[in-house]
Image 1: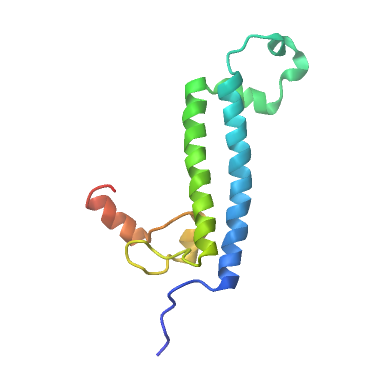
Image 2 (image 1 turned 120 degrees about the vertical axis):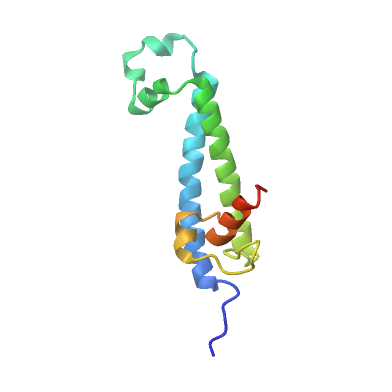
Length: 132
């Protein structure tokens, strides 16, 4: 009888570390851009009249209100913190273990949601039983 895995191997953890670090890099860039929008949106200084100032990023920024950018920045900050916490779990080899059931979270789920701390079943059960 095959013994049930209780944790991911170091090689598997390394695969997730790479995925998380890539996501973190992208998330931090987006967060910086959003913070810039929040800090500099609505300033009618010389930048607004300089034709070369308009870039693709600025066009997107123009579409976001300061409030929207602030909300997105807050969500991005939480996402970054969740990814950083996942890296800590990789370090102490508890990554990928459901905090409710103690079972391994399937790799497919972790590849999509690398900061997940619950299996889908545990998440649905918690959602039905009231939010945590």
